[in-house]
Structure formats: C-alpha cells, structure tokens
Amino acid sequence: MKRIAILLALAGIFVSQGASAQTLKTVKDRGILNCGSNGTLAGFGLPDAQGKWTGLDVDVCRAVAAAIFNDATKVKFVALTAKDRFTALQSGEVDLLVRNTTWTSSRDTSLGLNFTGVDYYDGQGFLVRKSLKVNSALELGEASVCVQQGTTTELNLADYFRAHNMKLKTVTFATANEAVKAYDAGRCDSYTSDASALYGERLRLANSNDHIVLPEIISKEPLGPAVRHGDDQWFDIVKWVLFAMINAEEAGVTSKNVDEMLKSTNPDVKRLLGTEGSYGEQLGLTKDWAVRIVKLVGNYGEVFDRNVGMGSPLKIERGLNKLWNKGGLQYAPPVR
Image (cartoon, rainbow, N blue to C red; front, top):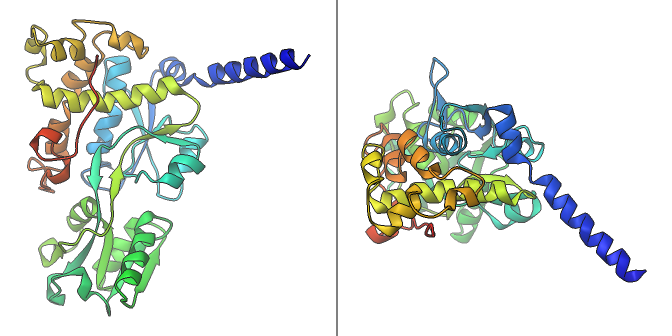
C-alpha cells in the first residue's frame, strides 16, 4: 500500500507539472503575447503619442512573438509599475515580464519567478545638477536624494551611505515618474536609479544639459526577463530567444544579411538558423525560429544600438554589455 501511495503521489506531481506547462498553447490560442514592460522609461519601455512602444525590453518581447508567430507585432504591452509588476506576472495578467527588473536571489526564490537571462548588465548611479559642483557620489553626504520606494535602488542607497558613514537624507516616492519630477523641481539634490535609467530620465528634464551622471556605480543590477515557476517549456523558450539574439550577433548574423546567411556552411550558423538539426522543434517552435527573431527584430547588438546605444538619443556605451569576446559580459550557451 505504501508503494502504491508513493506511485500515486509521483503521478500527481507529473500531472501537475504537465498541467502547468500551458503558456505556449495559451499564447498561441490567444493569438497575442501579453508582455509586462515599463511604460515610462526611454530606451527600455516607452509608448509614443501614437501608442507605439519602443525600447530594449520591448524588443525582447517582440522577439518572443516573432519566434512564436513569425510576427513581431503580435504583442500587447502592459505598462507596469515597480510595485505591481510581480503580481501581474504571478496572476497571469502577463505571460512575460521584461521591465528593467534586477535578478536577485529573493526574487528568484520567494516570488515564484524564474529569470531567463540578462538583457542588460547595469548598476546603480546618481544624477546631479552641474551647479552642485559634485564630482563623486562620496560627496553627497549632506545632499538629499530622490528615490523610488520598494526597489533594490532604495536598499542599495541605504547600504552605500551606511558603508561610507555618510548621512542619508532620502525623499521617497511611489513611482519613478514622481521621483524624477520632484528632482527636476528642486526638491532634492540628486536622483538615484539604475545608470541606464538615469540617461533616459535625464532626457525628460526641463534642461537636460544642466545635469550629469556621476561616475560611481554602487551595485550590480543584472536586468532581465522573468517568467512564472512551473512551465519549463515556456522558461526554455524565453531563455533561448535572448540567447539566439546574442549568438546571432556573435556569428555576424543581422537583420540585413540573415537571408544570405541561410546559405552559410558554418556549423554554428547552420544550427542557429535551422538549416541543420531540429533545435527549434525541441523548444516547441519551428525550425526557422531564430531566423524569425533576427529578421523581424534584430540581433542583440542591433537592438542595443537603436534603443540605448550610439544609434539612440541615450548614447550609452556598450560597456559590460559588449560580447564576451569583445571585453564584455554578454555570453550565450551554444545552439547544438
């Protein structure tokens, strides 16, 4: 009887796991991908006056849609605040969260989430007025700092000031938008957030050229997509979409040359583009899944450049986000 009970329990586990692996089918049946993004951050997630969304995170969502539907427009973007982003994913309101969200141990383990990779290696910095004549974050001991509540940013700020025996004067706000407006109005001397966000937020200030981003980076902020626990197939798909974009850049496959690269005899390129092997089918996708991604959205370098890099208003250097063989950290496992 004991053995039967154990077998039934195991069967229940497998049934439960199988029943939860429904995200891809749900998305296909719905005909559209629901993606949680920022909605207010230039370079990462921001709709224009006509409602067209742009950003690095936005393009990751589009790449997932491209791999599934061969149509990068089949995405419904849901603007989420830092406070409600995790609840929206947990509840199923969105299929995927790509909202400049830092991968941490507690988020990975206690919120029922799986982070699928890093689409931007970031770190926290400080924005100040040039008139303050401050050259280092270590000179902010008597300054007031605007910060968003309920974020890793708020915790890092407290840790940094405590570690350097500096007096901390925080002015906290529920949203980043409120914090930036308060800083622009002069309610605080500095605004702190991820360095990438600072470049984007600076564009919204009344006189953007009057402000600088200080050189210190005080934290590790690996930003990336997240999915719910319990659906390994969906976890694999989102993970490998990002990896395909990175591998495509490394292999020299771009949105402009992808059709020509289908004729390549390079084994890595053949496996990536589906002219050899059945790697797309193993994910539950088509043989040309990566071709769809690169043709319709671009490789990682293309996406970086147009959204936050030198081809964008933000003009952020690649830095840590260069490929591993160019001195950066971006590195993807091979398709094989």
